[in-house]
Every structure is written in structure tokens, then in C-alpha cells.
Image (cartoon, rainbow, N blue to C red; front, side, top):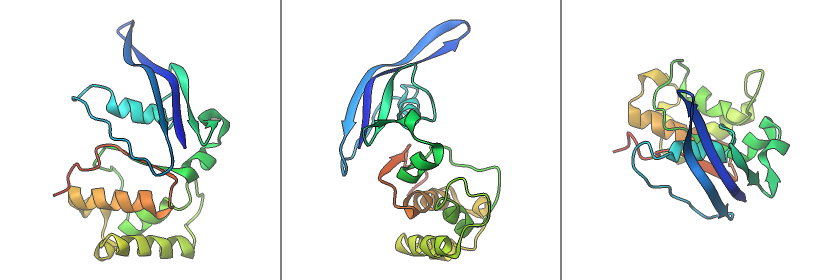
Length: 171
């Protein structure tokens, strides 16, 4: 499903190459779960971002269903993958239902379809969050927002789900 082949990542900091990740190899089959543990600053978020193409590997590559990420359009890739970042705040405000529905169709240029809202309401209900549907995201607690982000990630039924610090802000 997702494979990392001999991948490395470095940044240039103050004119010097700073190696963050070196020679990463990993194969995940459908249904498998991978947990990444490590101290703060060890490169866990960088690894996740590289795995899904949000950052470009300095060497090596990520393959999704046997095909290099570069061979997918962004739209194709984000139909298969959902990613919940560790960032817990948003600088824009929208209603919870709209936030969840937007994930149904990445890169949508217009309002989501009625089916997207139906699916979003069903996911909110499944996660026991339907009472939040008409609340504004900026009015939510950190834990409520985290759960809404889970609903958003799950609503399109991704084949690959990437969660960066998913337990943060949850009781």
C-alpha cells in the first residue's frame, strides 16, 4: 500500500547540511498500523510529511500502491490519503459541517454537493459529533476540533490515513 525506499531528508541550516532522516525503508500493507515514537525534534513529523509528499525526500522515494508519488496528480493522491497534521489551531473560521464536507472533494472549486454534506453528517453522527455540526470551528475546544479533524479525515474513506500526534488535546 505504502512503501518508502532508501529515503533521506536534510535541510540547509545556516549554510550547512543538517541531516534529519537517513536511509528510511518501510513497507506497509493494507490494514497495517505503524506508530512512530521518538523524542521531540527527532523528525517524526518530517518523516510523515515526506512519506505523503508534503516535503520532498532529499534521496529515495515514497510509493503509493506501487507507484511513485510523483506519478500521481495531487487530486489522485489526496483521494487515497487523508492526513491530520499536529497543528491544532486554524486562522480561518467555518462551520464544522462545512469543514468536514470539504474533505470529500479535495480541490473543489465550488460548494460541495448534497451527497458530501450527507456523508459528512453521517460521519459526524458515527463519531458522536453531530451536535457540533453547526458550530463554528474557532469556537470549539482543542479536543472537539481534534475530533472534527478526525471526522474530516475519515469522511472520504481513505485507503491511507496519516495521523500526526492524534491523541493531542483529547481527554
